[in-house]
Length: 81
Image (cartoon, rainbow, N blue to C red; front, top):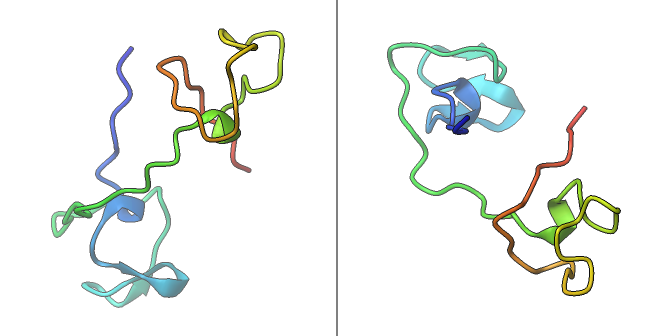
């Protein structure tokens, strides 16, 4: 199953501080989207062992090599509440 970025407000250029849409002048969340969606040009690249749910667990595919800044193709995001 491929993972893709959603065309939601959290990935839109119109999102400003305080989760306010600069296009519609309302407060939004990652659950919202609209026809004025404009994808952000740069996204955060923090897919490393330090942000992986498998880091320092028995499920890590490379326990002897893994370090906080290492990049890995088996990366699994930590849950965000």
